[in-house]
Figure 1 (cartoon, chains in turn yellow, green):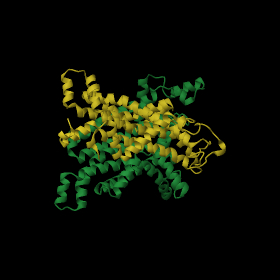
Figure 2: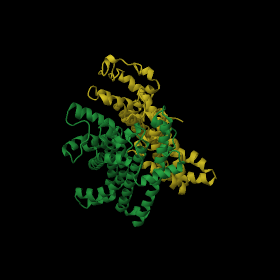
Figure 3: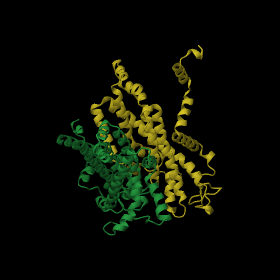
Figure 4: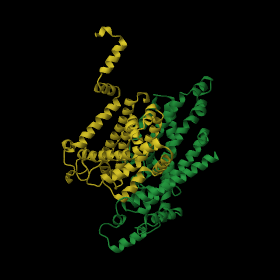
Length: 297
Length: 314
């Protein structure tokens, strides 16, 4: 078949079908500069967090008291802290801890929240009522206060923080999953799956869950960002990550004592947090647009 | 309406019951021995026995829970380990600064969130809309306490406009009180402001496109009247639902912001209690914030049913 025998509309369809996913992705990014910048920052962050030794100019705990609280220079691009450690190096190593805590806590919340939301939405009735009252109760304790409670019992560190932050974010996943499931319940494919006598577990897991993945993915990006913020808050209060291990929150806590001598110490880790959380939110918006172009605001 | 209120009241009681379960189990059932974390690894056995006794740890779990809730109903949350003073007294002496900080932040974020959100929606792509979207993006990504640090560096250290730390009761020295409240209120409010501005802007844009608004405009009502009577009234309903959440966020934010600005409130008490392993204090704070937020949500629900009569019949 030659091109001349096709009508214009057929050519358009042909062209769209032949467009590969990477090319569509590139076109999408060209039209969304904010999402592009966000994606670049997150990719850089992941690389840096995975291979800190490659990117960091110094060792993370290398002290040299002669140059403590120095401003930016060619040797120390972002200056040094109260023990003469290189700030850029510590931000890089800190990204590892902050990103880990963010991802783990979001994962924890998703692993417990999504199944509970599926059960509540699918079965309704008493199961729904019971789950939702517990969720209401969890929501009634502010996330940070809840995290403080958990940390009192199990102490600081990466794994306790996963638990402390994750528990507080379970309600968001339960609510979102439950709402999405209820929206899907009336659809034909669910009724069809029911009619063929599939087990509820299989229907929830294999049929409903894949259809509600896009809002859940968006929620995960938001949860990672919130996890990073709460980690920073807890570490700032001195009950999260323990020094000398660097996290952005630990660095901010240390900088608190030197606000007058070296304000840049408190600016840098905060900028890292804001850029990362903003990027995650933009990424979430991008994912939502990508899967559901009608939702564009 | 009465049946609706009673139903919501009953649900609130159930939710509060679960709040007590969560508050209790987080400190009692999670791994980690409270006695060791209070006294440290190297403690005498007599001290351990005394602390176990004080925490009622020798009783069965259910008895411990009943004792705790029973005490809490009489506002008896036990004693602190360090000073041995009743936890409820500690809470009461720390209440005023937190209440002032929280209420001011709530009012501030609602007034500015509503105003900016409405202005942004009415004149889309205008300067106010850009400001609103900027705050909406930046505000939810900024940790409260970091904004606090930045404000201290800028307004106190560099410009010497405001004192950096501390708290002065309003009835002792009103002007000093206000000066020391400005930065903490700003630090707590930006996040809430961002959420509200997004919410208000989104809702208002939707409402502005409704048929009844076009009708009201077409029949020649003044712009202000349309906004006040038709747009705002309908746009308020979704905004109201986030009010309960706002209370929760502000309560959480207080813990860090009070520490940054050295304000002797409940938040700072909690942060110190976590460091000092004061279980009784942390539990009491969890429970009290739960009660406050459940009450706030109850009020919001009732207001919701009153604003939108359809709700109370469902």
